[in-house]
Length: 139
Image (cartoon, rainbow, N blue to C red; front, side):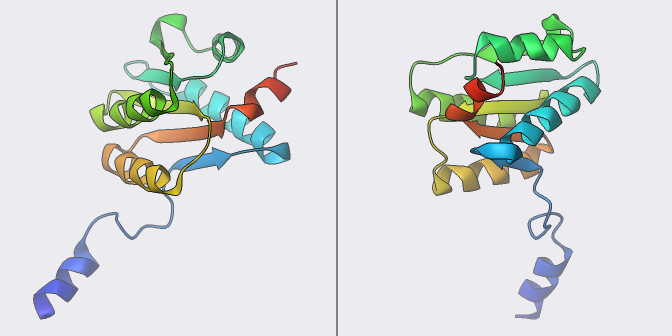
């Protein structure tokens, strides 16, 4: 029993409060989160990808306008929610992206937990939005 307690106390990162994932679904929080995502992408180091899963062409244009070189942007467009979830999780697990920005139809709690764990493992910033939030902030 002592061994389990010492392992739990010395384990790096599973019990940290800051997960590195920002979620947004509507309102003012979505606007500030999009701004935070753009700032994080612009501050990312030159050898890492900025991965956008889903979203629209206008957001990619915003990234370029924020100073992110277009050759560093990896935009993954998929046909279904399941493919978007899979692509987002794989982008996190590979560890080649500095920032991952994803748009999903809905944020399932089970998938959200998997994304948090993958983000901690890869130490990658991840911003998640519901698809409805994109249109209102680009006009």
